Image (cartoon, rainbow, N blue to C red; front, side, top):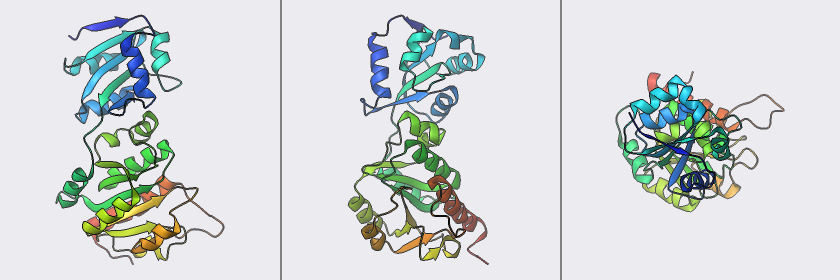
Length: 276
């Protein structure tokens, strides 16, 4: 059984380091909070560096079983409830936090997925200036469910590995190939060189998503709910795709829009492109 190290001071170096990770000041680490997210990280093979649990959490059978099942390559720190609460990011913490390395993601992992013949959609989701980490996380979760090749976030978007984004993705960010913080010009050049059709989503898109042959490899670009995709970038795209909506409705939640389009792509991958 793993040895637990008790910490009784908020000024302990490990506690201070965990706070720095939570605040995004340690760019190579992730702050993973909550029983399910830690379980997902372990199952995905994320490299855990340390785990913090509250004293009360050691009365939780699920958490004790999780600690017993994982290896001894990292330290487990037991904190008094008040100290644990001082590093937790959520208002009602579940009593377990992991500090880990970030997944090794980037362009190469997406390129590899695009070449896969294991049922992966030949679609890369591009997220342009998405500032809401919860929304970004929800889109990553939707993208994994649909089976896309990967997700790219542009420079200026929220970090997909922050605590809020990780909660939104419910563990999908541990598994989906993600290429974060890419300058938009670089993304466009890469898409062209990778022979990806560039599709910009637009509320007034000239093509309905129902009339698209989604089997063509694509970079599918989504902009923020507030500002969408800039006109210049939209004009650079090979096509603009929209979702027909009832008159008077001006916008739709971004994760919902992504889900509608991506699952039409998945439907076509399963049954073909007959859109009648």
